[in-house]
Length: 282
Length: 261
Image 1 (cartoon, rainbow over the protein chains, first blue to last red):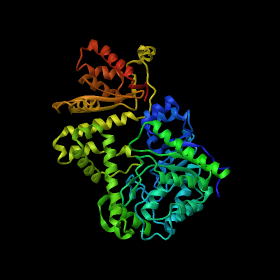
Image 2 (image 1 turned 135 degrees about the horizontal axis):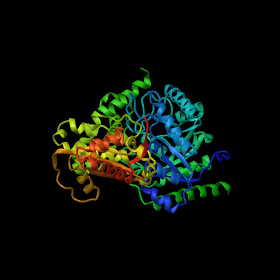
Image 3 (image 1 turned 60 degrees about the horizontal axis):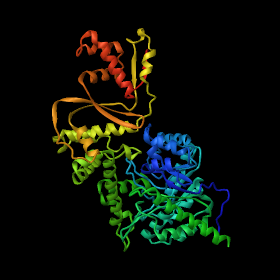
Image 4 (image 1 turned 180 degrees about the vertical axis):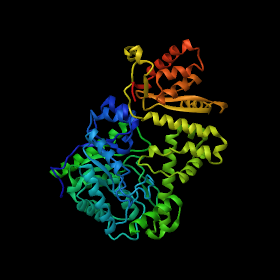
């Protein structure tokens, strides 16, 4: 037991805000502690997306989660994009801003995928330098999320958790730990997901993600289109034991069910966290 | 080129162009070979972008049917990979692609459908504009009318369409059987705009289209009246122009009157 940071900002249990649920959220004010919003969906001039964003913000704290920062790309950082991210964060008083420890394209292309980086000293140096510049522009610490991956590079000289921890320590940024992604990558690359969690620095972790995936047999693909599976819940319990109280949310991006199903799933997360707390206190 | 740059170039070439060079940089295991692993990314790339295109052009996707739209999506993706931070922007050149590339250019209504849906998407999340109300016309002094110019709301989009794609789109949107495509020699003028949060479209008579285009180009009210003489008797044009203006205002298309430039 090494967790239980009392200084870590804690929002409770949240969900991803999706257009399918705008009206439900606004009118029934469900018992969700906070919402995570997908940054790029709101970098638009106006209309419905921003209308609902601001209306819902009046009732719930929000964090921003981006997919196009491409922090590991060898292309230059997109400064205009970052300025817009910063302006959006200010307009909704986002509690924090996260994106992924990955790259999404080079030579100006955006493949709209979260591509893994090789776990090398060169990649660490590159990402650390970019994170520092991003944090300067945003004027705050960035959270980086571990991605699911289907390949390992021949060039990699360390484990994913060593890479993630080194980036966070050296760039002085925070971690959004995706429990499902740890599970997916552990299956795909045949490592023990608990060892991963056990070696991520506790004080760097600000948020957890939970999600469902699709198992193809030879690989698990991170699809966010299904409920969280039991082994991922077990891993979540392990994470709560190690990291203590961490803001937790469930991502669902496809085959989006009625809101009450997501609420029930979120309640399951609450129960697990409270059982772990009771077990720790005993 | 650094090692990281080279690796990213090889990986991207595998995904985008199916260049196999990258396989040598990836560890294959008994569970899955290097190529099987890389193919997950390559297949997901096409699937994701074509799916996004379908969301941005739902009418075109339904009209063409799944297989034909998938073929179009992949062909478009190969020619116009995304360069924007938002996948919402993917498809900005689809109408032009359909108008100029075989075999799609043989069916000009496809390019028009894409242009129409892109206009709808643009109006949907265009910048909010404070709109004038018809009452605002009451406070304009008579001497100000001739020199008055108009600033239109950000969401207003003008299109000229030869085919009946708005009717086809509307039927698809309502889950009804779309009418057969029809084309006419002279294009019909259309506007797409958003009032509050609702997106609208309607066709325009020739004189209204001319007047609106003139207003959008910054012509003053007097010049609009003068131009309308082509369609109406001189003694009626001021009333005709005022009537059009009133309609544009009540539709929520005008954000400001301006008197100097």
